[in-house]
Image 1 (cartoon, rainbow, N blue to C red):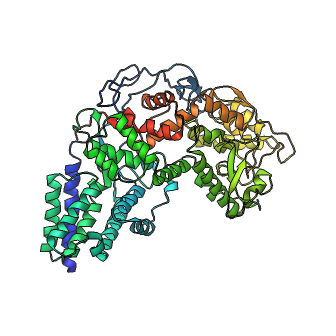
Image 2 (image 1 turned 135 degrees about the horizontal axis):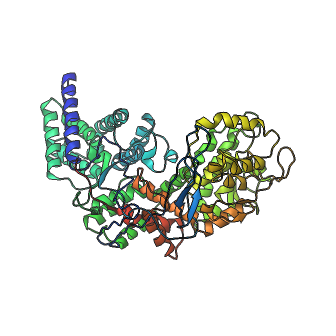
Image 3 (image 1 turned 90 degrees about the horizontal axis):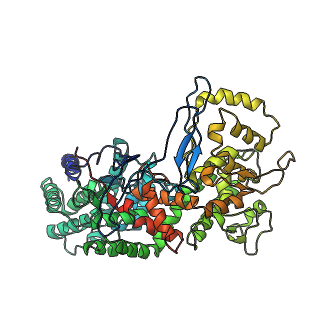
Length: 628
């Protein structure tokens, strides 16, 4: 094929992509080329009621009256938290001329049962696949060897580096843009070249004919698009292949470039959530549901049984969805995906980037061991009888590198490479005291009450951490000069009782204080470096129950029993399933539908929570789309 013919072909494929994009996105506002952040959804806001119906699932959704209020700089913010309780969060920072910062919101305790927003807050839309999902989809089409090569050659990050929600990652975004197009184009070119180089094996064409080639292209496109082709798509594929041949391509080249065009098509790069009528509220089509569920819990395309269920119309009723999700949760790839997702959820990769130049005991080997310990803890704890085991479990897995962290002899059988089970002492429990979790928020020379408090507030309670106000930096630096010799508790108590610090720090410093017994290497200590007693006793913020707790295990028990942690995980799993920013919180009615269903079940495991999200109204139904 001549260079000019390839150039003409490239123009043809790109213009064909543009046409396909317009057709595929017709009638759906913001479907392509525009980031989507549907924070409002159905406009049932404070004091309003929104209604909608679904098929096969609970049929009515009703918005609830919001109790939330906000005030200006220096004022308090009232929010309704995870357990439905009304709490006073942190207000704006005061000071002359200083702009206020948002308060620390978050999960709630006990109290009123009102919630905010609609049960189904997301509009009809198109959702872009993440690069990891694209790689996994390529692997499902053409095998893991190619998928591994595509990920490596195009610098696709490891799945443990994903974010919540996945498209919120700066590397991703809600739409294919100029910045991401070149990477997708390179991936599509690589896939096409692989098909050319392995033509006989991939196509199974015993005789190289146009008929066999076109049959393969059509079957490949149907698998790539994750649904049966419509007539216009079949016509387009035929036209592309025909024009390739007319431009001088061989049969093999016709297949190569056709495959590349399929991998670059919006039908592959996006999944639709239009339902049968984009203008009306309702459930997704069975094939849309199949893709939604699969990319949510498997991070890849639907498998054959899931597509077969879609073909038979058995993905509408909640019971049918639950049966498929239960089946998938029993497979190793799905378990591995969700383990990696929760690893990213807790920010466990951060320990590998921590540097402590003056701490000789903190080597790369110790950091890697902490990383692996957290991996094993999540993998072994996630599938236990209760989702709260992530906070309360008294078991971990260590190697010889970590024995000194726990102040124990290396357990029998432990080596540098072999991790063995260790029963935790009374001063440790779950992820909150895991070295990988704590050290990820340590300073080089001492543990950070603030950084650890912010981490716990966000990842365990879904609190909204306030943005730092740079106008306050000079005042903070001045304060530091007056606090030489203070204990970390004294510094924290000053921040929580004096402006301009109080408004924000009272919302997260208590969480950092509860883990104050753990030094920068996460070793338990009763005295600080100056030989002064460490007191981890504190009163939790109202959004975590407002009770007095004495240490980290006590806090883990408290927020496990009051439902705050479960509500946070439920909200984040729902947001993860929705893939992009949704404006949901633990007190959203959408989140509450999941937590209420979960509470009503006798099964309180993580797997049961995933199933509750998968069969929920907010995940599977959409409010009407908007015309462009």
